[in-house]
Image (tube, rainbow, N blue to C red):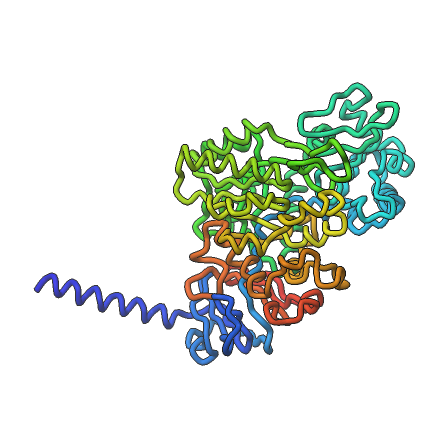
Length: 557
């Protein structure tokens, strides 16, 4: 009798709780919209309304049923037919780098060395003095003569002033003569391990630095103040919101910045969901491994991964290849980190409870990281480590099935394909393109993928990434039919990888990345359907609203 009474009481209690949940009051309800369903399906009528409370979705469905959650405190917004998708979650970016770029000289889109010089000259005139000038975004591959610039380009417009302007990918930079002097770089300075100081015919540094050589100059630049760091973070988050981004995986954060994010989160002032990777820096790793992974109660901040670097970038010929660059005989790029360090740090990360995300672009770098992960699987046999290779751009076809076999996630950026395709064949030759930016092939082997942009290397806009994934063409539709068109994805898959794919890569697939009851209320509202529209329409599509944890953080005028 007693057991029966307890069971009956428990049943009544559960029914009561369910009833309360079903009629929970919402703080925000969206109606008269088109909601891309939680499984990405497009068949049949789409749900039209969604209710949110306490940072989560409490109901998705027809307007009548959703409006049952309305009370005196509910904000109801009529979307007038706009489309709601799970919030865009950029799985590989540099949030602080974006804020830094927004506060410095913007060299993106410069079509010649002279245009680079003109923008530097303008910044010099607007901010006179002897302080450092920094910028980012130039790409010699976009110029008529695709040659690296030299320090003379800067010196002639700024004189004796320290300047460092980084290439678009961040793996190369041009320094002024004064910057080289302050860094102690001269004719007899040896190339650092994993980097190169380019020199002229007399052996003098040209000012162009590759990969780890950039760090020689960066180490001499004064650290920003706390106020400047906060300003940069604010700039970056606001910029993300404008493009419908509700969450990011920040690939490399210092322990100081982790502490700043934690402070914002605890004060309720962090309105972008951040999944952080610790920088591979002794001070940061020591603090992180001692403390352990960080999870805030509302999941707005998670720090449970470590960012490693295997090689450089393809555009600056720093990506490590299995064979020589076709346009640079005798050169195979760089391993920018000692291989034993990659092994030992990967092991330490696993033992401390952290995921590993390793930057690898070239086929040799990708193979090396796969080998390391295989060693760790055989020796440590960790439970669901969800290892990641960031970029996974150039992969030997023989290595592609290993991603699925080892459970390695490929964190890829579709816009890298369309940025690189005009010159990738020159770097690799046609016979090595089979495993280049091979999204569909990798999916076909059962591998997990997630999409991002790698901003500020590329533009922030996720819609541009969806376009690249669905076309593999430039905005003007060239090359016709798409470059390596066998890798083109359909609209539903592309959106899935930008949302649910990113959630899986962050161990959050049960609460993020879908429009589903109980999931975190991160949503993006668009003026078109990114799944069924013509690909070209993605480039004109606008974000109408960005919602993070049930709160509107951006609303178009």
